[in-house]
Image (tube, rainbow, N blue to C red; front, side, top):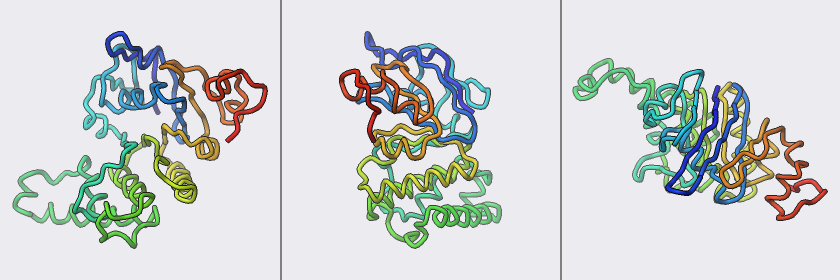
Length: 257
């Protein structure tokens, strides 16, 4: 689904991402973890097209995407959420999800401007599909509520539904548990697993180790911009290099979560 080969990103003399390579098979949940400043969000921005790599290759379904704009990558079948929730004020939860369908609309500007039958039919289908996503993520009862007035966990679900509205094959989640309490985090974990079970591949950056270990099929660990480990969760918990960067010394015990 996704392949990174020798990806570098430099900001002047700072190596934010340094020779990172890994792949994401279709149908898995893969997590990227590491301490603050490890380069996780920069790497996400390289994949999503928000930043161009200094060098290296990024392939999505076999097609090179480095240097493409975010909207071009989105049309290929990749959606993302952000660490800081980005919802429009004065929009309901349903309207917020409908916005995410923009990349797949076909009726055209003229049809929309004059509200022609093709445009009306497409809007009806978008509304129905968006309601289905709200139901899938168990927030349909809030469809007509202003999205930014919802509880933080519900806003996360709206943002995820909006990303799913574009029918992605790969969903990028940037710290989906940020700001959530224990209950909300567990709910988000359950929703992410459900999304994976729908056949959508998930790549996430996350600091909550309990969530990562519970839902991930594979984990990549970054430190100072470099990949230091890539394995299944149980192996990552016992990896001496990973334990060292999290605990500050080389312990024999597992990384606790």
